[in-house]
Length: 322
Ligand SMILES: Nc1ncnc2c1ncn2[C@@H]1O[C@H](COP(=O)(O)OP(=O)(O)OP(=O)(O)O)[C@@H](O)[C@H]1O
Ligand SMILES: N[C@@H](CCO)C(=O)O
Image (cartoon, rainbow, N blue to C red; front, top):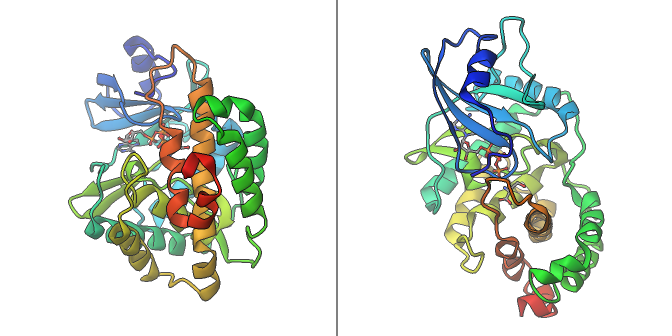
């Protein structure tokens, strides 16, 4: 469960009086997620998500995320905008943290997506990119390629406590990737950058909601699809690859954005990049999560193992993957 910042019912009831959302009926910490504190809030008028922004979200970026959500919602994308208080303010402070009250979207995150669901999710990603074609704001990727080597350095030799040799192997993999990363300029866009199955709310085989835009940024457009591919097309251990799910994601996306030859050629390298990005953020959290945080840490190696599928030649050179 990700609850880093406790909020009492009394404090929350007082907080809600800023809004036209009725009175607090119940509140409960949400079990999923690792980045932010989330509560499910029921009031006399409806259901909401209360998010308190933690570690990786810079409060200076919140206005960007809120404008982005408003832009997508205005174009009919199923995203949850923040609720504005009676003064029109969406970004608040609660228990010393930046906080927003967010529209609740019905639906469930699937643990084992089917190809049919992946087709719908890939299509939703394409629709989102199409809706963002005229989005005017830019934000650098705070977890993009340029940040991986510094994060690897900060994790340092402690990575070997996760798997012996991991620091060396990730150094080799990143150097290998640096030789090809973005060699041919690919189309850029505003991207979600974290569209895992747990950030897509499904209603049966249809997409009911896209959530958790707190890594959204401007970067290589098809990198968003590569992140999704790496997140969706494997089991939780990263050992079993489901090609049908991966193919369905790409087929759905191609309804809006057929991949160019350059994008197809770069796809596996971009996916290796995604593996490195999520191995590193998970490893950092693995090594640094506060002992008193109520959170289920995610396994860094589950992402690292996916490199075997995207670059078997590289993997064969790495002790931790052979
Ligand atoms: N607008 C929403 N409507 C419905 N449920 C939501 C909404 N926002 C969040 N949730 C629920 O809360 C959970 C955690 O939210 P979220 O993914 O934003 O957290 P996080 O800590 O940023 O997670 P992550 O580890 O994916 O970065 C989601 O999996 C979902 O169950
Ligand atoms: N979706 C990410 C968390 C965001 O960095 C993960 O599963 O590791």
